[in-house]
Image (cartoon, rainbow over all chains, first blue to last red; front, top):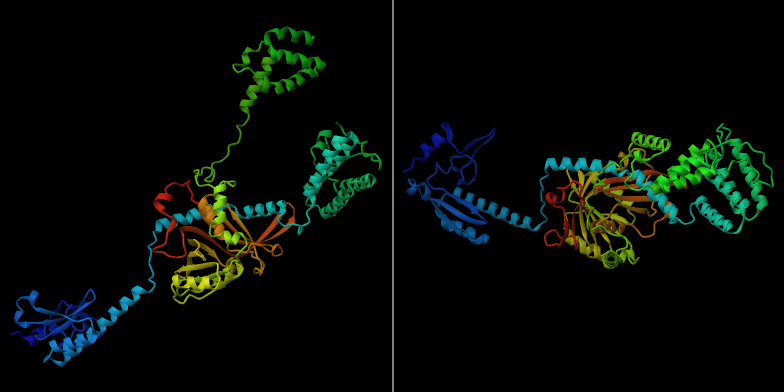
Length: 299
Length: 330
């Protein structure tokens, strides 16, 4: 019937076969009914009248056998036998259907069936394990997000925000007594004292208080001075001895002297209002220890 | 002379004339004009009838003066406007948390973090990665473990998260942090609060490891850092803020002077780790140690990690939520 050798002569060696894939070392056959996948005399489904394969469809394996009498009707040429899901039973089925067939085809069919069952088992196992889901990224979206992030970073001004928050916490006293920056506390105490003195006393006291406050404010502004810390210490010491008037005045005088010494920068007050504005200034005055009120200040 | 002049115009003018008369009576001579101006200025804000225009003043001197003043004000620069920023123009979010809201206070007293905030549990964090982490991710995990006190890094041996979680709960972990990696770079984080707490999934970007940071300080010590949470305003933001806060122990060691900051700006959460020092009561210096990264919330799920059957409280839907540039979720 079919001249296998002639067919093989034509397609296998000399002329064209559309299923053949040539590579450097080997030839493959792309025909879906090929049992080994290689392009050989014994494996070519076109050049063998007695041929059989195993194919799987949706997890079910079938044994396909070529019926050469129907070579004229290629659509009906292959006979399909459903193999059982049990591995051994399926092998027996193959044997029983391919009885008296050449050894090569029987062997290769069983081999192919084994491989197919193994990869089906693996697929089922993989589905149960953790599967990695690949999520596609849109390039536009990513660039947009990156830009937004940069802008947000600039708008955030992180360092400033953190510093502000830390200073807030310090002010509120969450750090307790660890840090000794008592100026604010003493300012508050001073203000309290001011209120008390206003309610009770006359102008002299008020002037003194004002003057003291005045001094304190100026000090805080001059944070770059090297003797800032010393002045701070002096200030605290002076504040501690608030009750004692004489010591107050002495200390005040000391401070004034210090200030004059350190601030000979020639910033002169135009009139009394400059002194009120708490700027650095050189005060030309003649002071006496007991009466600080007698200062030449335009009110 | 002045007095008589003023008194004649007084009948025509009413209020203004009376006041001017009073002041000019006090002051003498040429200083009067200047003083008048001052006094008049101070009265102006109070004494104007609404349908007043400069030309109705009969007194030439005063009329002239008012006109000059008007001209001057026009020439003055307009008041400086406040520039519009995205934060200014932000669409008002109705879920913004009001600090005194009782409902929220009650919710927060009874939610999954209440145990932590009442001091009953101490945080214990398990940090792991996705399968087969590469060098950068591994180093990032190690650095995170130094930043977060009581954190342990474990190698993920292909285990399923759902299997890991019961084991963690059995060993008293309070947090599970999974860093997801893509192309040798960390790009996602799943933060799961353990005894059936919410699970948050973040996108991680701009990871900077310690050796890539300029002017950084020495390595962080073992002291518990303080935590700063900035700008978490809405309900969702509040939940996420509490999620971050519960990572760190309640009593920070002030001796250590370390602070971890989570700053939310336009839905990006910037994480920084600093060491601070107070130079005086108005200045503080900060020095950055430790890794830095930014997070963007992708989804918040109610129970522990369950991507298929979990109940999602909030999912980022780009088309709805990112349509408006002035609207933010956190």
